[in-house]
Image 1 (tube, rainbow, N blue to C red):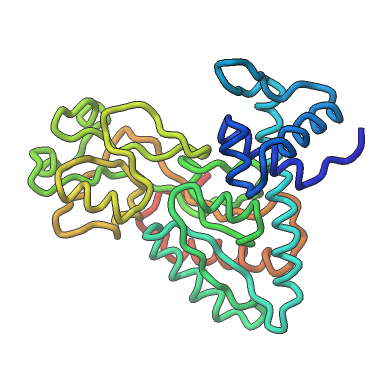
Image 2 (cartoon, rainbow, N blue to C red):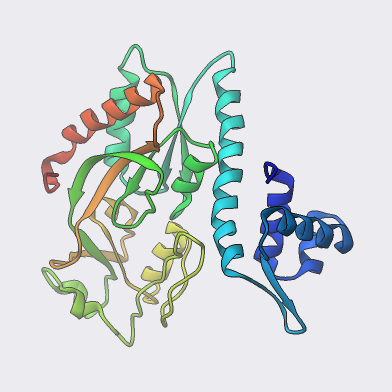
Length: 294
């Protein structure tokens, strides 16, 4: 089998996302017949059907589902190679650190301070994102290193170093009866008729079932809690997102959340290694209220 081309992988992924050749062709800015031919040629080269085509529409085969994940990884790797090579060739080199907007503020500030005082450390640009975007930033080369959470994020394909482990808290509207409690357990928050739990997207972008609102950004979540529309359980360090209308209450039996510094597996960059080392040093400076890692 000949090597696959990035162009045909992009064509395939667009059809897989739309499950409609006409809509996929419109997204790609091309007519449908050449797109259909390109996908047929891809199937012939690989030797398996990627789609089931019938009067009811188009759906992925088992092989096609496998190729979706593989193609996304391959295209991200190609994009990463270009972006990281381009940064390495800039007159003034720098590294990009991806973080969740509003999370781990104390740790982030400590890391920037420690790294900034390192005479051999490259300048660091901070790239803020929402939930699960840090993994995408690392995979496609927009970032070199990231602060992520073992409890929530997909760390597949990354090397990691644990920085701190902490309890989780429920962020509640200040006027809610549970906001007066010293602590809670997860059963206290389950099936609240007046306060359904917010639903974060999964790494693939889909949402779990449930009556709570779908949220994607920290700002959206903060306002929904203030409006008494939802409740959320988050790592204690993310309580910096609190508004005056919020109360943070510890959840005793919630799984502990571990913040990690992550970077592409197998990286041999001494500059990335220096950021990782400085992240560990920074974590030691802010770990007085955290649960020690093993």
